[in-house]
Image (cartoon, rainbow, N blue to C red; front, side, top):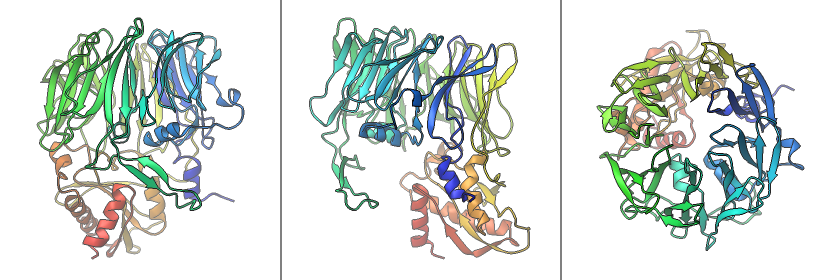
Amino acid sequence: MTDSYPRLAARTLRFTLGNPRNIAVSEDGRFVRFVRTPDGFTRTGHLWELDTQTGQERLLVDPSALLDGDETLSEAEQARRERSREGAAGLTSWASDATGLRGCFALSGRLFVIEFASGAILEVPASGGVIDPRLNPQGTAIAYATADGEFRVVGLDATALRFELLPETHTQAWGQAEFIAAEEMDRHRGFWWSPTGNAILVQHTDEAPVPVWHIADPAHPDRPARAQRYPAAGSDNSSVTLWHVDLVSGDRTLVEWDRAEFEYLARVSWPKGHQPVLQVLNRKQTRSLVLAVDPVTGGTHPLREITDPQWVELSSAPTLDPAGRLVTCEDLEDRRRIVVDGHPISSTDWQVRSVIDCFDDAVLATASDASRDVQVVYFGHDGTHIALTTGAGVHSAIVAGATTVIVRSTLDEVAPEYHVHLADGSTLSIESRAAEPPFLPQVRMVDLGERELAAAVLFPRVHVPGSRKLPLLMDPYGGPHAQRVLSSARMFMESQWLADQGFCVVVADGRGTPGRGHAWERAVHHEFASVTLQDQVEAVEAGAQLFPEDVDGSRVGNTGWSYGGYLAALAVLDRPD
């Protein structure tokens, strides 16, 4: 029996199983390591290595060879994966030391280390259910958090416990990002090694102030409701502090900043050769300080203040470049720009999406010169730029040594392409083993209405233009931090399946969605419902006018999830017509 598309999408995790992920390049650029499942239906991730000198791939870790039976996850690890939208199993994350000689990972709460050259894998005795293990840069020690809220640093053979931090109550935890940071601020880590490997920054969280909610499982009405602390808007947040631990002396020092004014710890980095850098944010998210940390005293001093009357948008920056210059992403002149020591270096022709890496004279970033496309671009400190990618598509990059891995998604294929560019100008590819989708979405990119709303229109694949008028089905997200109309076919698989049921499906990115500048994104401030619904209505009317022989504007529906679901309900209430 042939699987239906919904069943096939579920079995393949929307055709992402089998794609390379968690890609890292060794410091010398020779090896590219990544997680990939064996095929497009198996959820268990394996660790692989591509040798750029030989062009050969090698399997490094097969979890089934290390585990007795099925994988088991603690509640804390399940929650961490949920916040990171992780649906796969087996080896889903891993970390390498700076030398590229060793890596570490957790399976079923157990801790493992691999020697890459020999392929030898060692299990390091650990207790409490290991979460997010990371080697120090030298590859001589491992730090990890546990499901019980504990934090430990151990040697590779675990003959000596080098340091541990234990919670005093069940509401406390060491070394883990709190709910707000992980769910809303895209910070999933709770500890950071020093470049020298002899010290570490560790987050301490106490959830005691956070209200308790009781969540029932409608699929299991026989089970009692589960108690969970949830920081609803307007309620108290977790108490978050940051500590510097000297692993030589064992001294522990509180990192000081005005936590009463800036209660969110948004970003932490510890660049090589420099002091740690923090970004903290006030409760209203309108003021942010970038702070340098004195590891000896725990004192901080401001490097830059970023403000916004609506909200400060967080990015992958801030950090320090090799020369110690501060690199930030800031909204200036209606564009998100790269700023180095207070001076914008990216032009207003580009909308910066994220910082990939910093160099002596340039910053590598993803950026858009058209809202539907994302390119990889070098922005020079002198104001020049070099685009490493061009054309319609969504691109990202991983760089180390003289090796650059470019990941490219387009409207021509559902599976991304993975190209490894080497110093001599040659190119290798990393194989995708994703399942072949049953169809390729047929996407028409259009601009709708007076606001030129970026939209994608999909008809049934068998539809003959002008043959009949189809009901119109809106399929937006439509809210902050999520852009759907991109030059990537995998964004439209569900939309095409819906269209094939007999609809004209329109996906429209209205005001509030990213990629079109500060004013566009902030238009929803204190107008969370009215503005977004207005733009969807405009898309409905303009779509019906654009295809008068193919769309019946009197029959309109709306579907969506998360904010898109909110929009669907809002449309029924406010615009039933």
